[in-house]
Length: 359
Image (cartoon, rainbow, N blue to C red):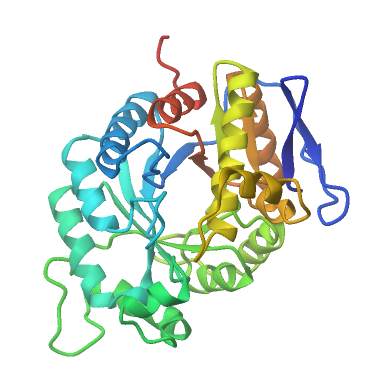
């Protein structure tokens, strides 16, 4: 069931939701996270930061994650969101890959309805050729933006309906046989870059199962169908050349800090960022406006997005992540660090790390 952080007396407790989420996470205190950890980096831009500073922070984060034993880092395609700078996903991956050595990097994901499958095959074929064995390609069906911005991308509004066919076409462009006579992805053909289906509903789960691909559920911001989708995926999974067995990656928010008080403050900052994103489209919200929203029933929408978030000091976060992994049966956790600045985000990554570096 979704859990949320409750701030009482400067400390955090993980509480259950009483109505829409009746299940309880089986938390037990353990010293280290046993499930492989990865990172979804949104290239977040803090209120007092520039995009250039965000990119510098993403590079530093990737180097730290590589040292600390994280399995992979993904970057998500979003457009026209002032607090997220990862819109040109392939370009950002190229920059990070050129300055790291071993960690896997990929899109988490490319919003395929925004693109031609051939162009994505060429972009990621280029990345795989430059950095062999290190590139992933996660695919989403949503536009990653609002309707007006999607129109500015010059895409057909019906493109999302062709998502399953476009995934298959892309997979063939990256394989040994072209889906269209006389057309090859150069580079791209024969690279067999591993594909992942991203989703927050049964649609993505069923598609991933049908195609025999790994499935990544976006429970870090859309948790409602988490257990149902994972169950459907595992039940209907058909083995494939890429993936002989089902493989689930579950997203989970993280705010790890030196003190509970610092973590609490960063959680509140994250709630305010979410409130602005949800309710600030087309209008400018003052600090007083945001406070009023978070004190109203509308705050439920914000807290629902943050429902699966581990908040606290390192041991508390580790305990939460192990409980979350046990509850979902996930094969891998994709951590999303909601800290309010680059330095705090780096510290959160370090405190959560599978192999903690000395302090």
